[in-house]
Length: 407
Ligand code: IFM
Image (cartoon, rainbow, N blue to C red):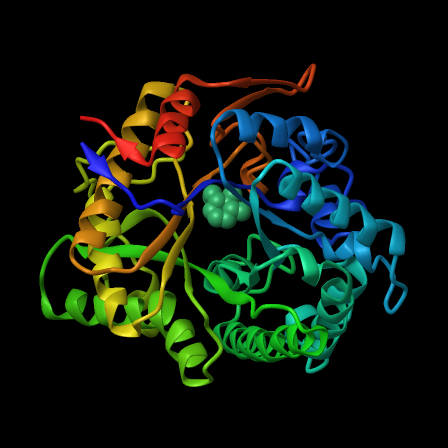
């Protein structure tokens, strides 16, 4: 039996665009229309209206924490014109969690931007940081008394990779130079938001908040240990996993480390070019690991290794996402169990872990992949919007309620 301490945070995560529905002022909404996305986000899970019911389920599943995001494009659908009613909506959402004894963990930016912001060159524009800070300030003025945990930016490097390197997410750029500039702007946005959030709490006399990013960490493993692959491993760990954290640490802008972990990437380079070193993966089917329904390797060991490598930062670590999409729910419980075991082992080696959130509470809109990948603890029937907790949700609930994982 594995025992976690009292006060450990257990729960699940969502993001606004993926669950709310009808986020019509967002750059993603425009992108879906323009590309004729086969499964557009549409009403998503109708969580915008059904959040109270969803939080009742989260409470019934023993969750004491829940991560959500604010949809900037609802709050500021036109540049500089803030919608008080939408801010009030998020206040109600956060209070609904508090009423149920669930700690809110609030993300300010989770991949989506207001369309007006994108049309002005998005995160590539010099002014992006000040626009983001103005929105952050408005949100914080209202919400700060009710929130302790803030996440400024979700998965900055995943955003840059998909939107500015692979070019499959809006704004569909393919430029390492642009990607570099966007990364710098996201970093400045985080550092300045960190200062702003702390200043607002100080001004209001509130107990100090816990502010971080949600950094996706991938386990990079070489399928052949030649020199070129070893260099590639070093560069990928640096660029995709640790540089953003290191830079944020240098600016003293992290109160904890927010970490997302899903899978490993099997590295095999086919040349010495920058793109080979940063992007090539194994094409020879060397991976014999079980996979999720998107074909990602299931590799709990990677979580353990990465958690140990975070010890050098000497900060509390909060797992803000860890999950599997699968049509076979028994795989989901097995995935959760094996990852929680890794969390426990890392704690035993001295990693200061404070919480674990599963991705996701509900099945939802998985970006360019639409609704087919099922990540939810709770099944969503998209014809009726009926929610049904899965068996894995009930098994995870036992861990949340008791803080123990039985063999
Ligand atoms: O759905 C996403 C989420 O938006 C960010 N982290 C990874 C999840 C699964 O792909």
